[in-house]
Amino acid sequence: MSNNQIDKLSCIPLGGVSEIGKNMMVVEIEDEILIVDAGIMFPEEDLLGIDLVIPDMTYLKENEDRIKGIVLTHGHLDHIGALPYLLKEINVPVYGTKLTLGLVRGNLEEHGLLKESYLKHVYPGHTVQIGEFFNVEFIRVNHSIADSCALAVHTPVGTLVYASDFKFDQTPVNDQMADIHRLAELGQEGVLALFSDSTNAEREGYTMSEKVVGETIDDIFNDASGRIIVASFASNIDRIQQFIDSASEQNRKVAVTGRSMINNVEIASELGYLDIPDGMLVDLGELKNLRDDQVVLITTGSQGEPMAALTRMARGDHRQINIKTGDTVVVSATAIPGNEKSVGKTINKLFKRGADVIYESVSGVHVSGHASQEELKLMLNLVQPEFFVPVHGEYRHLHCHAKLAEEVGIPKENIFINEPGDVMEFSNDKGNKTGSVKAGRVLVDGLGVGDVGNIVLRDRRLLSQDGILIVVVTIDDRGQIVAGPDIISRGFVYIRESGELIASATRKVEKALRKCEKNNVTEWSILKSEIKDALGSFIYHKIERRPMILPIIMEV
Image 1 (tube, rainbow, N blue to C red):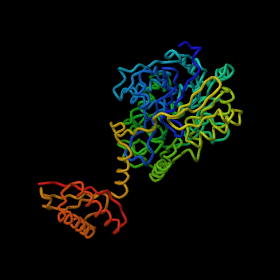
Image 2 (tube, rainbow, N blue to C red):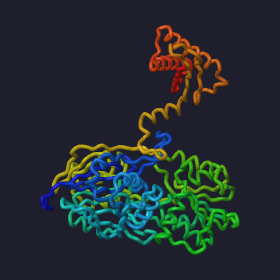
Image 3 (spheres, rainbow, N blue to C red):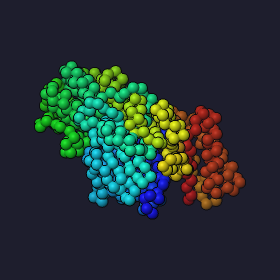
Image 4 (cartoon, rainbow, N blue to C red):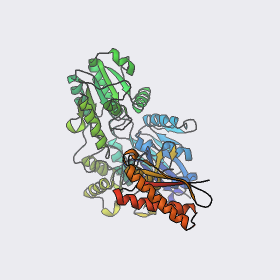
C-alpha cells in the first residue's frame, strides 16, 4: 500500500500511564510496530518479596513479526530496565543515544544477552528510519540524566512528539541546552499528537536548575570538617559530576560504593560523560589511610533500599564503612512515592550514629528532573499538537496535566487520559479510543518472571500476617489414624509458651478425624478440608487469628 493511502495509526501504552514506572508505548501503522521505551517499576510494599515489576508483553509476543525496532528516550531503569526481558522473547534493533546505550549494555551483559543484541547509536539532533513508516528524530531535552531526548516520530499519518521525562533547564551542568528551536519548528510544521511527562503536573511554577544543587553542595563541602558521604541516584551523572567538582575544590579524594553507582561511574567516565581528575578516585580500602577531611564517599541508598550501601551503613552492617560522629551525610534525592518511610528510617539511624544529615526537605540538595506546570505549558505551546496524551504519572498527575492542556487551548475532546492497554486511534482530523489489549504487570522474583501471581502473593500476605499451622497425620489404607495428629507452627504462636492452645487444637483435629473414621471417609481431600474447617474455626474463636492451615496426610 502506498503512503498516501495510509490514514490512521494506533498508540497503545503498555505501561507508564496511571502509574509511575514501567514506561512502554507501542505505535502501530499497518503491519509495522515501533516500541518506545521498555521500563521497570520498583515494587510497592504490598508486593512481598518481589524484586521488580515489568509490563505484560503478551500483545508484543502475539505480534512479534510486526515489530521493527525499539527506541529509547533516556537511560533510567523505568525506561530501559525491561529491555532484557523483552529482548529474550523478541530480538529487534534498539536505538538510543550514547550514554543510554552504555547503560543498556551493562544491563544486557548481566543477563547474558549482549552478544546477540543489535544496539544502534543515534546522536541528539539526528534521525533514523525504522521500518517503512517510522522516521524517528532524537531531540535533546534536559533531565536528571545526560543524553535524554524527546522523540519526534514522523509517519505518513502525521508527527507524534514523545516527550517523556524532561525539563527546560536554562543553565544545565553539562551546558547542553534543550533544543527548544526544533520543538517550535515541529509545532509550525504541525504535530498530530503530543505525549508529555506528567510527574510534576501538580507543582506550580518552574523546576529549579541543576546548577542550584551545585551551589548548595559547594557550601556543604566548605563547611564539613569530617568525612562527607553523599547518596544519590546512580544514574544522575550530572549530580555525580557536581560532587566530584566540589571534592576537587576542597582537595578531597573520592571513593565510590554500591554496585549500580560503581557501574554507572565506570560507564559514564569511559564514554566521556564524567570528568574525574587523575588520581582523585581511590579504592574504598584506601580511605583508612586518609584523614577524615580528605574523604568524599559517593554511594547508593538515597531511597532507603534495604541492601543499598547507605542503608547498610545506617544499620551498622557495611563491611568497610562505619558512620561516626563528625561525618556529614548528604541525601541528594527525593523519596519516590512509597519510599518515604524507608528513607525516613535511614535518616533517623544516621542521626543516631552521630552523623550530621542533610536531606531534601531541609535544604537545596536536590532538584527534580521533571518539568513543573509552566514548563509543561511551554512544551504544549511550542509543539501545538492537535491531540494531547499525558503520560508518565499516576491518574491524578495525568488529570492535572490534562487541565493544563485545556488552559492553553487544547479542546477537552482531543485529550486522552489512559490506563495501560488502552488503544488510541489517530487520523488527520480525529482521534478516539477504540478498545484495549491485554496489559498489566508481570512480577519478577529472583530468576522467575511471572511465576508469582495473585494467589502466591495472597499466600505470602497471609503468612506475613498470621503465620502457618502444619498438621501432620499418618493413616493406614483403611483410613485408621496410625500416628498424629502433630501440629507444627511458624509465625503463628510460640509453641513452648502456648502448649494449652496447641493441645486443644490437636484434640479438635482428632475429633474431626474420628468423625471421618466413623463415617468411613478415606478421601484425602475431604480429610484435609475437615481438618482445615475444624482447626480454622476453633483458632478464630479462641484468639481471632486466621493462620494458613496446611494438612499433610501420609499413608502407611
